[in-house]
Length: 116
Image (tube, rainbow, N blue to C red):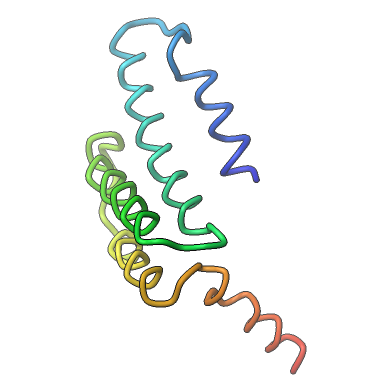
């Protein structure tokens, strides 16, 4: 809820259209950071849908690719990690196995905890 509802609302209100900034350069940079963050949030929301269709996996792939492409432009000190590469493959798993809720690890971790 924090990432998918409150964070986007807060960021849009402080960095979006109509917000006040000291210079146009600062406003442009913050807008790029906002757009970059929204790509990641959209990808997360799509991956967590309860149903999955080809259009969803295409949209996920588009958002995560846009997020990774802009990473070095928005965050100059950022470096690519294996997690970014793996995030691209989640679209493949969504196509193969359906919604994330049906194959993520939480149920198995709970079962292991009960067995212990």
